[in-house]
Image (cartoon, helix red, strand yellow):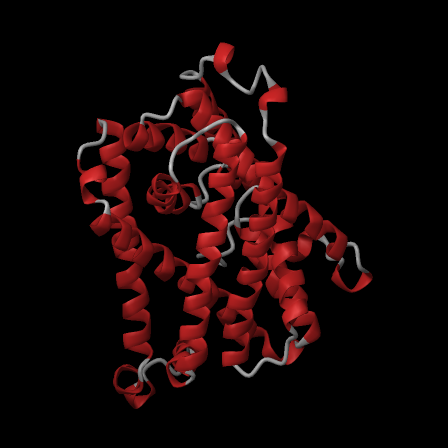
Length: 334
């Protein structure tokens, strides 16, 4: 029953945001009524870049797996990332994808369950750090473009500053408290002996400080992954007839990705389209019908690879029951 109400709430918010975005669309001048106007060459390029972002995401996670001494092939890491995308797309929350990734790798390494869960968490934290740093770098470089948006756009950007800034602070605190001096002080006299996980989890995180080269490699790959992912949406914009610069899309995308990635709608649909409509209008006076269509085109390019994850999921070794994923509210996310 709880899962049903979560789905109903997310479905309602998705529908409201989509309706809000489409309320600004002039359908008489839109690819929604003229599908022949879509440039499929740009759409193909967007799909290719989306595929590249999936491979880079697999490489990022593989770096964190190697940091923990996990013997997992790069190909297997990419397979599990695609299955993650499939479950994230189909799940009532974005949590099912991470849960599927963890469960499937646990089958291969049943003695490393906690370590596997922590590699997925570290992978999400790297995504948060790279997204936040990219956002603040772009904010500094394009401050004039962001300084005078609409009231709604200003609220969105301010929220992104607090959300991503808070994310960076959280990641910093995790690694500070996991460092040996703090860890020893916190656990002196075995004050938390009744909860061994409270001691074990910081020790696992501290391994990334010791294997800092692999950690930095994962973070570097994360920047490349975001570049490919954001570029797929630029291709979506060009596919539907938009002529806005690449820099404008790169300026807007960190904010759009941060907020639409929150588990408040189904796969970010609706929220993403409204944010595209607001920010591209503020930054480059893009027509709402073009912005909304661009968002949906970019999403389609990326959803294609999530759907292709079904090909791997159909393999006997990777079939799992829905019940194995646990509650949709299980804490497994970025």
